[in-house]
Picture (cartoon, rainbow, N blue to C red):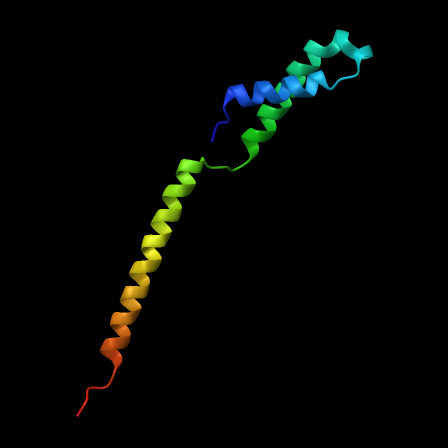
Length: 83
């Protein structure tokens, strides 16, 4: 999953803004470094989008419902016949 560049840019900017005033000359360089570190670190994570997660949750829910239905049918078939 790729993160929105806007989010990474915003976070890198906020980190650079937190740099003490005495290091303002390094601010642009630090912002670039923050951005690179964030992109690299986030790229290594095995993440999915919210949409992908919701789709898989729906598939799992349907699978569980189907499994429960099949378990009920098997239980009904395994009951001894009434005399």
